Figure 1 (cartoon, rainbow, N blue to C red):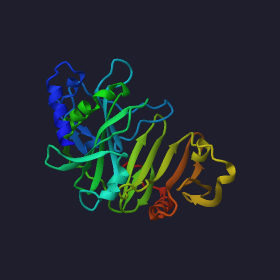
Figure 2: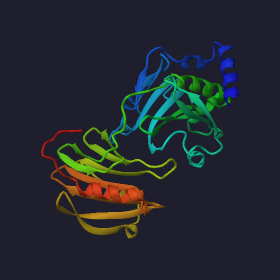
Figure 3: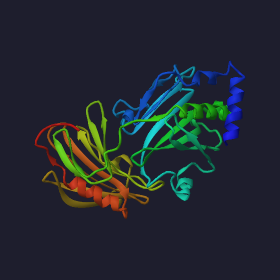
Figure 4: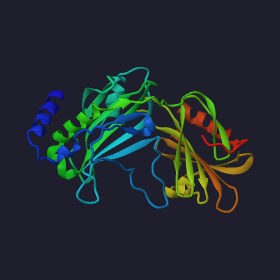
Length: 324
């Protein structure tokens, strides 16, 4: 794969008018994921979160960063980087080969790429045919000093499929400018406080914040092995909560209801499944246009599910309104 990418890079250099020239690394670093990484994007690049409805919120900057590397002629970007916190933990790089094969896109070609700080990341080039959606042309899994992984995914529009090797080569050149930052994920068991509430987070659970126009969602992301299903809990604070099973049109007969408490008050917990994933949720009204909606999403048999349930059970009023 390295030979293929090198040939593509030479082809780009020989054709100065290729629009991919706009994607060359620039001189200034841009932070990703709240400083977890930096990259030197093209001078035409701009940080732009994914679009969302007026009633929703942009993704948490602690969970993903999106950079439009080369804008398009219309409303769609030509070349985009998505940097994602995987919430995956590995004992030591590189990850287990079987788990890596299960995690990467089917048929992806694997290799290695050296970052600007000397770290070695796993690179992969997808082979999926172009469709109507943006086309993944290159990706990298960056091992962090705290034994977690960050994923970098580069996309182009379907009409650029014939030049995917050239775009992949340019994505690789950009990845080689990446440096790992000093910020690490807080993984120790601890008490976290937000908006007048507090709870006891277990070890290997990361708190992220997703502020909305008139609400906020605080998520507890449980770290897991590569290719393992995600496990998370959340606390929604706002005036218009809605059960997730209602949003997913789950039949009423498929929902198990059980009496319980939240913040010392009686609530009804709803438990339902989506395949192998179990969702547990409850809503507590706190006045006009004020409510707490707590939820947990994880495989039912996963020990992380019980740990997240136990964390939600500790939710209580904080002695102060300090946010963290």
